[in-house]
Amino acid sequence: SDPLPATFSRVIVILKPSVDLFDGASSIMNALNLAFKSRCDLLVVTQGVLRGESWRGAWILGFLRSARHELKGIKVHYIDFNSCKLPAEAAAALSYILHSDDSGGELFVSPGPTIEIPHLTPFTITSEKNAIECCKPSSTYIISGGLGDLGMLSAEALVKQGARNIVLLSRSGTTRSDEAGRILRTLCENRNLRIECLSCDVSTMQGMSKLKNLLLSLPPVRGIIHAAGILGGRIPIVETTLEGLRHILSPKTDGGWNLHSLAL
Image (cartoon, rainbow, N blue to C red; front, side, top):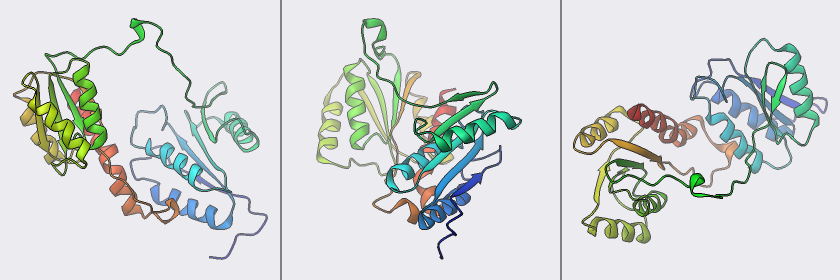
C-alpha cells in the first residue's frame, strides 16, 4: 500500500502471445491499481492481438482506453507487436510511445519497422455507391440485446432499410423502457413484418441452440447486430474485480464469437 520509490516511473505488463479472453486480465488489473496508487505510468505489451488470429484478447484495447479516460494524472500506454522477433522495432516503439504525445497511447508494430497508430477518420457519403446497402425482405436479421433501447432503434432502422424478418434476442425477454416498448408494439402490429422475440443468452451454448432451432423456420441470415451488453454501473475501473470484468465482457466477447460462428 506504500507509494513506490520516486525512481520507479512506470509499471510494465508483458503478456504471452497466446493471450486469451481472460488470460492476463488479473495481471493488467493489478498493474493498473499499482500504477494508480503510485501515480506512475502503465505500459501493456502484447503480441498478435490487434491483427492476430486470436480475437479473444481484443478486450484489452477497449479496457485500457476506458482506463485512460477515467484515470487522470497517469498515462496508460499499449503496444501490440506483430512478431516476437523484433528487437529493433521494440526499441523504436518504446521510445516513440513513451516520448511522443501523438500516439494516443496505442501502437501496432510490424517488421520494417512499421509503427501504426489506430485512429478514426471522418467519412462522408458522397454518392449512392457509398450508402449502406438496403436490407433484403427475403433474408433474416438478428439483433442481440434486441429488446433494449439500442436494439429497438436498430430494428426500426432495419425495417426502414427494407428488412421484413427480424429476430430480437434478449436475456430478460422484456423491453427496458417505454420508448422501446412503443417501438416493439409498432413493429409487431405491422402485418408485413415477422418479428420473433427470443429469450436467450448468446454467450452460452444453450442460448445458441434455442436460436438455431428458431432459424430453421426463417429465411437465411444476412445480417447480425450485436447490441447485447451489461453495464458495469458506476464502479471505478480500479475497483472492478476480475469476476466483475468477466461478467461485463462475456456477453460482448463470447456472445460476439457465438454469433460470428453462427453466421459462417
